[in-house]
Length: 65
View 1: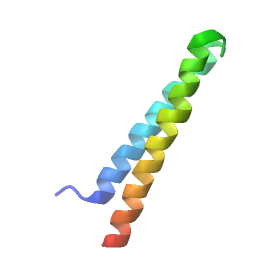
View 2: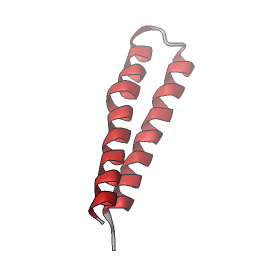
View 3: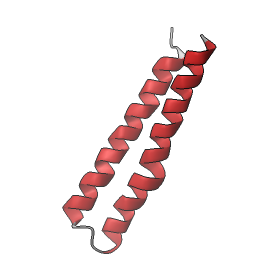
């Protein structure tokens, strides 16, 4: 059975993956131009909130046990 904790962990891991892709992209492009801005956007506005949502889901499901 799938629990809320495992869903929270999965969401957080997806966010970490997005964060890694964003940071790697910033270094690969040299943080110049629109490509660097795009990867910064991915990192800040997609990766970090995804990790936060996964953590919140995990904590809430942990409390509800």
